Length: 426
Image 1 (cartoon, helix red, strand yellow):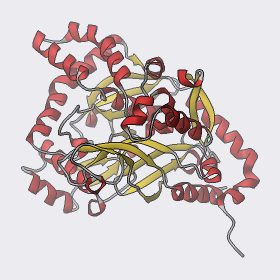
Image 2 (cartoon, one colour; image 1 turned 135 degrees about the vertical axis):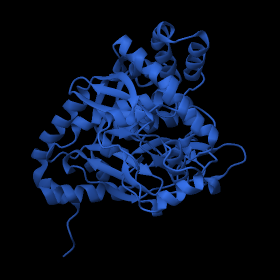
Image 3 (tube, one colour; image 1 turned 135 degrees about the horizontal axis):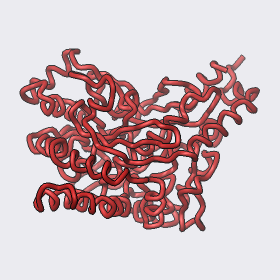
Image 4 (cartoon, helix red, strand yellow; image 1 turned 90 degrees about the horizontal axis):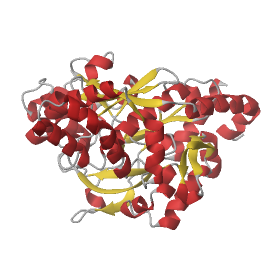
């Protein structure tokens, strides 16, 4: 006799799952995320000590890491002073002396490689509705950056400036201002053409406008004020990392609800794609990660690309990114997804695998419909519609950086395995 599908096994628990999912949605939609501080990661993330390195995606060991992630790890070990140079850092990482853990295990997220170590400055977002906090590194800006696997002296110097100058100033400004409320800021960004994953122009600008008065009061001299303001103004993706910490703070209270089939996290490490459900605890359900489909910068092709990676899929988990593409048709062109018609189609498709709309975040192009909220793993499996994720594309070799942008899809196997586990629990 053929084994029953996870959906068939879960059918007898429909009422229990529905109640659990209603509670998960309630927590998700009641969230009140506020950017409150910037602190060294080791100060606010318990257990982040010497020779502990956090990475994007589900758990992975050094031997299976992709090229960009290995490059970022080596750079971080030199940055922390745990290795004198990149060759020694590589030997140290391969020796077993370094402990690797997912950012998610420490209440954090990170873009692309997602590498986080104890002295790196992290954004602190507090969900005031539930009292939990989440963390993400400050966006490094453009050019050579560690999130894409770069690791030379210029990359480490920028990280040192973020740690020693910009991070402390930003933290002081946020404390002085009493925090930056994010729900309303994102709502404005959606109305101004952002989707908060590959397009953050509006929200980055709105953040600068909110912080500028505090920068002016706190910065030690005009040159410092100018450089810090210019850093935000010159980085259209500055808000992405804030949004990621926001997304993590929203979804963590949704975890741990017995019988809930809501997706609590999606993430990838360049080797595997991982999914967590609300009702399955800390377990990750993985499948081989796929290549994004998109557009490449001049001189690069898909042969140069690394498979998809990063914790930034937390944005889609809360209904932003590809789920809110209808608000940002310019992004559809940038990631090779087409134009306005295609952008609307992405959002409508994602609505078919979610349980509600978040009316705090509405989309003008869809007559102010709320963004799709609450991915139900059962609907993903029933419809065969795989969650879409707007993403950058990294070169497969460390140190080269971003070579394009596109749309990635979550593998169905992750959801099938997660639901089979949930059925077994029930």
